Structure formats: C-alpha cells, structure tokens
Amino acid sequence: APPTAHPSHSTTMDARISPRAHHVRARKVAKARAKVGGGTVEAAGATRSYDAVVVGGGAAGCVLARRLTEDPNKHVLLLEAGSAQSSPLVAVPAGITRLFKNASLDWEHYARTAVQVEGREVYLARGKVVGGSTSTNATLYHRGCKEDYDGWNVPGWSGEQVLPWFNRCEDNQQGKGKYRGTNGPVRVENPRYNNPLYEKFFQASQMAGMKHNPEFNDWSRSQEGYGAFQVTQKKGRRWDAYKAYLQPALDRPNLHLITNAHVKKVVFDGKKAVGVEYNLGGRGMSPSTVEVKPEGEVILACGAINSPHLLLLSGVGPEEQLREHGIDVVQALDGVGKNLQDQPACLTAYLGSKDISVTDHVYNHKGSLRKRAVLNYLLFRRGPLATTGCDHGAFVRSKAATGKLPDLQLRYPPGCALDADGVSSYVKFGMMKQAGIKWPSGITFQVIACRPKSKGALALRSDNPFDRPWIDHGYLTDPQGSDLASLIEGVKLTREMAASSAFGDFVEEELHPGSHVTSDQDIEAYIRRTLHSANAIVGTCALGVNPMEGAVVDGQLKVHGLQGIRVVDSSVIPVIPGGQTAAPTFMVAERAAAILRGEELEAV
Image 1 (cartoon, helix red, strand yellow):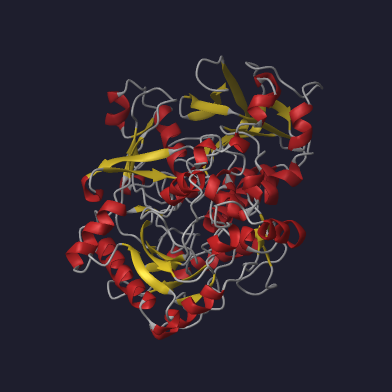
Image 2 (cartoon, rainbow, N blue to C red; image 1 turned 90 degrees about the vertical axis):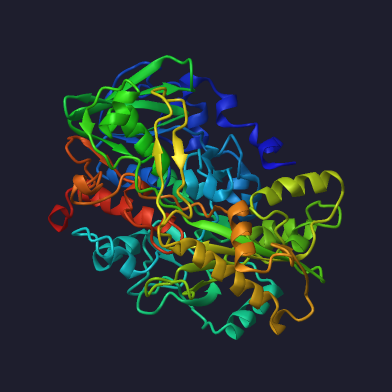
C-alpha cells in the first residue's frame, strides 16, 4: 500500500490513551502510556512553571531535554506536536519507504507552486514524532566542511570552535580521532549492507576522475571523492535523537514530556517570554498555558519551518506582515522566516539486466518481502533491510562550482527509481504490488546541489496557528543560475558514469530522464519538472550579529531584542553546510545546552 495507507501506522499512542494521559511524568515511553496517576501528572489546562520549556521534540529538543536535566535542580518541559514512537518502521532503516507522506509521522508540508518548477507544489518531508526528522530521514551523517562554518562569519561559530561540539555528539564506530568522537550519544557507523552494484559505482567514479574518500567528515582532507557514507545507526537499527538522547533520560523526575501538544504562541510580558500556550490534541481542544520561572526560558526547537512560524504567530517578525494578519507586534524582526535554504535534487535512473538491485534483495517477483531478507535482519541486523538505500555516493566539484568546495552530492541507491521525483516511487510500487508486478532492477543517481545559492522564505497564511505557513522554497532563483548549472552538470556526469564500461552490460535503458532528453535545454526542462527536495531545510531564524542584516538570534542563540527566549534548531544555521543537516543540528543543540548551563558563555 502507499505510505499514507499503511495499516501499521494506525495504532499509535494517540489512539490508545486519553488526551489527559499525554501529560506524563517523563519516564520510559512504554511506562508513560499507562501512567495517569501520581503527583506529577497535571490535568489539561493546568499551569506549572519550569526552568525551561522546550518546544519541539526533534533533534535539538531531545538534546536539550537530556543535557539540561543532567542538573537535578533544573525542571524542563518538552512539548512535542507529534506522537511518541510506536511504529517499528522507524527503527528499521528500510522502513523509510513507508515514512514519507505519512500523516501519523510527517508534517506533510508542501511548498507553494512556483514557476521555476513548472507550477508544481514540492513536498517537504519533516518528521512529526518524538525524534523529529531524525526518526524519518535517510540516517546519513555529514558535517560538511570546516570552511562551511568559517563562512558563517559569526564570532564563536567558526569551524575550529564548533568541532568540539560535533565530537561531543558522537560515538563513532571508527574510533576516536581529531575529527571523531567516541563518548557521545549519537552512534555513527559504516553501512551494514553490501551490494555488487556499489563496486560498479566506485569503478565508474574512478573512471570519471574521482578519488576514493575513506572518511567524508575528516576535515584534514578534501570532501571530494566517492565512498560509503556513515549513518546514524546502531547495529542495523536507526539511532535517532529519541534513542540517543531522550530515551535514556526519561526516568528523570525533573523532565516532563507532553506529546500531541500543538503550541499556539509564546506568551510575552512586554519583551520577556514568560510561557507558551498550547492545545492538547489539536483544534477544538481547550488551551493550556505553561509558564517559565522568573529566570527561566522558552526555547524553540521546532525546526526550520515551525520555529519561524511560531515566532510570527507570537508577534515576532516583519512588522508589516504581522499587522496584515492582526497580530500585535512584540518585536519587529525582519529576518524571521526569510533566508530559507534547501538542497534541490533531481535524478537519473536506469533499468538493469540482472536481478541484483537492492529491491531484488528485498522483494520477490510478486512484490512481497523475501523471507531471507527478513531473517537476515532479525538474526544479524544485516542485509537490505539495514539500509535506507542511499548510503553510498560521492561529493563532486563540478564545472559549475563557484567556490573551492564541492557543489554536488551524488547519492547512489542500487535500485531503479520508478518516478523522477524519488518519493513517488514508493506510491507507484504500492500500485504495482497490488497488481502483483515486480519492482524492476536497476540503479539510480540522485543529484543534489549540496551548497545551493538560492533562497526562499515562509510567511503567515493567517493568524490561525493550525493553518500551515506559506512556504516559498526559492529553488533555482539565484541570480547567477549556479544551482541549475550544477544540477545540469550532475545529470551529464551521472549519464557518463552509467554509460561507462564499469557497469558493463548491466545498464539496459535510461528510464529518467530518457534518451529523448539530449540538449542542455532539454535537461533544464527535465530538472524543472521533476525537481524535489533533499530535505535539508535551514536558515529561517538565522544566527548572526546584526538583525538589520537579517539575523534573528545572536551568538548565544537569544532572539534579538527579546529576553527569555532562544531558538535552537536547524533554523539558526545561516548558510547550509554541504551535506545532510542532522549532524549540524546536533552540534548546535549540544553547544546551546552548554551555553544555557553557563559552561562557555565567554566563548560567544
């Protein structure tokens, strides 16, 4: 069945317990489901004060909840709009095929139609579950390069200064080193699935002039090259922010977790944040208010879409936009919602002559799971179910690159994409499975502009907190046309690789974009009609010194012009690093926790 119709998602925490039981003392989730008594459970509508109210239980929220409650005298409330984890598909890496566009685990955001992508809405995957997008992403662990952080030009946030916080996050399988950590909560491992098509990709990469890169996060060497991408997994299981950070802290009496809590606004007394107002369970429910102590803080950790949206709803943002929607202005701050950056992607895909693709190892000729794959995973946590499918690839500095760093990331699933936008492949496969049709063998190259120059924005649709914001992804709008030029070069490169002798007689036919697409103009048209998100949204509450230049938070992540409120998540990343953004978000949150605990105020 398509992802949105998968029956295993219908049985969630929300369906099994009453809304009242969502107000839980933070214990292990399994215990919390049953716990509705005891002196620490508040009824809906009750008010209680905390040292910190963290809004959003994703990557950053889980980090903050754990680190701040290491001090037993600090009481923290974590509010998450999604549910507690209950689907086994989150833990199994290959379960990613059922996580996209899944209403019980995903926000199902769509960017508004835009002429540069031929009037299409573009789907933006964002996890709506404890663990956030780390529970639904491809598990790739990339920091980017030292130069990415130097380029932020924010005092205290250079590559050298953020490195210790990257290392603090990690428990790296490859052992401790200058650019690796081993004592952190986030398990980082090498992929556990091997496929003969990986070696063909490596050979094709060599023939294209690339060198092997044994460790993409080693800042002592160039990021360029081909190889295996490290993943946030532990012995074949997804190791997301929930498992890494939050779950071990759930027994602490000073940590409270409330799921299905949709925060409507931050409450201000003048310029000081004093609490938040939220609805438990969604529209139509009675609002609840929670306060912070006089010296406490509200910390927004809702991600690059929801954090700026919540600031706008609370009266913080561009003054004209707030007044247009009848919202009282608490702080005029033009940068809120602007500077949105995401990595645009397209793909090339090829039908193969032999049944050796990852899909052949997972599914039989009728589209059903192979028992061998299931047993291999259950017994050894290995095999095709232990991969999200895109943990091998390359970073490339193409002819279109405008700087010294790679402008392209290639992700190489050893399987054939059925649809040119990637995600829809799983919907198509659902229909094929119902018809008893096999997923065809083949290979795919996903081409990502990993350091995009284009910028978008988000804005209020209305003053109703349950209305999604308008999202303008801004793809392919940079004045120099660099992003489009990079993608065109990427398509050409992957076509050359697929046609090389490395693949021998395996490649039979180009499915996407197809042999009829030949000129640069044809390739451009193909990219525009199939462009999709690589799911790395950042920048909408940008870190910076000067709010007149678009900065929303300062070096200590405090919102400019306000007291008692910070933003700590991917939205503060001012310029997107080359690679996936989970690792930088962990870094930001670790550092924020240290700042909040007074461990390094002098550094920023």
